Image (cartoon, rainbow, N blue to C red; front, side, top):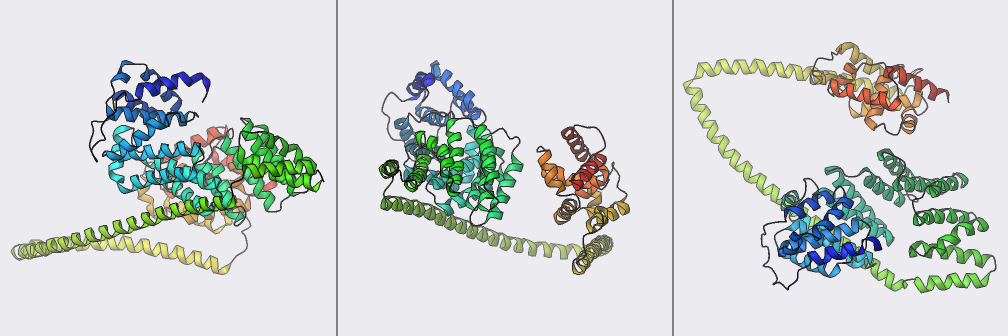
Length: 591
């Protein structure tokens, strides 16, 4: 812990602790809830943990901290633990946190119990107790999955809404770190994908998502390099800037991938050296040095490898990279005949190695834990599906009965109002015929498009002479010509002209083929452009108006107009977007 805040943290711990022993609470008790001050700190913590930490210090010195009830005393300890972690301090209130874990397990507040187990797992991880940490993380997930609707209600009551999915992202991300540190591949991939799935429910930090994609890419570097490259590129597209650790990790990962794919070591080493020069701290710098030294070692350039591996070994802040550096250094000095140094590095590895049996037992235990959780999760999902089937069946039975009653009622009404019903039926028949005609016209149009695409596929034509001669471009221009789209009309009136996802992708592919990776190079030149911006750019490349794009993409005209202004701001010009993008296309095609 930083000495600057030691006494402040100590004050918080003392103020929030319970001075007297309390009886164990009754299981599933309901409580009044947190104080206004603690709830405000909790809310702020999810956005600005440093400011929340300062608020907690101020609260600890106030009179309100001296009169906390049992619930808020434990709740305060939970916040202390979370804020220590979020502000990069060691977890120094373990005894009080363990009491809070037991307390929240015993009352009807599943979300707080899940958070208590999660942060308790963080404490175990800080002590390298990976099995215990894994157990706590999985317990947190189990609590949330068991009573998700109730946990969601509790989460929304204590903090601002929609943070339960983000909590799941955090927990699965910690499991990714844990399994990665033990080199357990498959569980790490499973947890990584689950974290990304929960992020799709409620989007969190783009940096965190990019970091997860970086993890996925690293697991596919050897077995599926194309997949690894895909994940790295997706992660880079999500990052809003390049001045951050995640960006530097991704560039380093791509350098290792390029080296493994046989693209030469010089450019890979150059890129990692660039990232090392931008490192924020010594630990990050040593991580980059380890990659550089490892590549030099693999290339047999031992003198160069020693320059980078020696400082990595001498940096004692991370035993994991020390051990890897020691293995490389042992082999290098052994090959150079320096027996004394070779033995020194071998002794270091022996002193810091977990026995093979102990390591295998730990890995086996971790695998068993995650598999047991996944089996439990599957059984619960199956039971939930069966319950939904039963509910649906009961609803169908009820609906059938209601329909029978309605049928009898309708027969009676028809008998009494035959003439009126016939006129209404005639009107409805005309409306139905009109609807079917519209639907039929739409189906005919879709069938014609499908036949046209199939004929183009069967013919397998060579690349068109120009971008505008591409089949997808001709199709778009035909729709624009036929539609005569108006800016003042609601885009929903032009649903028949909407482009499918496959057609948008075909347009991007045509632009990339004719203008030398147009969208890729444009995204690289202007990282602030989104995927949607690139799609709109391809449409502007055809010289389309905002009204045309509004109809084709089924977006409001004002939305398209605002996006156009944003793109002009990114390009730093007020020229028409069609002219700007055509200029880029000509430049890319010539290089």
